[in-house]
Image (cartoon, rainbow, N blue to C red):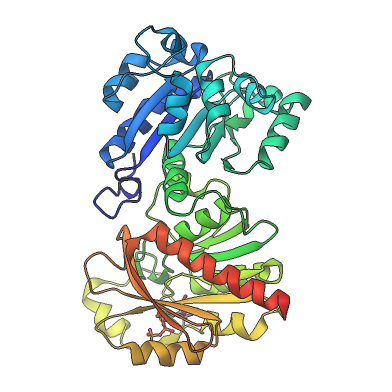
Length: 423
Ligand code: CTP
């Protein structure tokens, strides 16, 4: 598991939450013990239930041991020791449900209201939000019955769906059907914990920039900054879970590769490449979140040969140019109704500089976060700061996970979009 997916700690939205993990029959089930272990490490209270086919693919003993609780299967409802119907007990216990992998059979049972396995009957009895990640062979996935059932599920309340990705499948075929990776499932559960299942970004397209830019000095060196791209990635994934289509333009990211799943990704390195990508993608965007940490200067002409160490100081003493303000360019070119969120990194307590930056940049909203405090800024799993706008409004965002902050920012952007539609 990537360290960024293992935030833990008291601010972790998963700490203390009751998570029911239900597993149905697909070979991707073998990835679930790792996920159960990660959930427990993050302080979640976990119970597991398996269908008969899942129980043959993944060890219920391993799941019991990792979740610190018996793993339930289809024999358990018939135990004379059970004081209440087990499916109702589990359904009422769960605050958050993960159904992964979802097989064609369990999908069919659920959509058609059949409760003939423990997992299927819990799904019928459950009123908690459910994160769903199917996995199956490409031909099965695209067969009309499965496609129709999946389509139906998209329209249900309380259900958040992570469609399968394309890749090498257990049947040796390359195609759609790979279950979303465990790190993305964790992110999805965390999102259910802080936001829930509502899809208020449906029909909207968000353009996010994230991560650092890199300006070459010579073939061996570059000017960059410690941005990891986490804040932008959280924004992008949170928007996706809220129903948006998302373009992510990003420099080098320090985050699980799985967090790029589902996004239209446009990797860049320099500010010039970032600018070109933004120019291309801006017209389609309903809103833009400019979270990239753009290096402020670049070489007018980077050297083609490696500069010797002894010559470095002299070679870099001149020949710099300022990188244009890309955010200001986006604001200048925006279409009516398009809303733009800028970011500002600040140190100390000087909000005046941030206010001046907000006025200068002309964006609709600006999130200013400190980079000189523990629990905020570069590489941190948590963040805090001030949201400026719309207009003179200033809102303090208390310390929270970066995903929770991302949801706050998306709600502010969505409100700004709603307002632009009304006026
Ligand atoms: N930004 C940009 N183009 C630049 C520099 C910054 O689009 N050349 C964007 C960032 O993506 C961010 C916002 O402007 O959304 C503020 O970035 P920040 O680095 O805080 O501000 P700067 O404009 O670089 O000002 P300064 O470094 O002087 O604080």
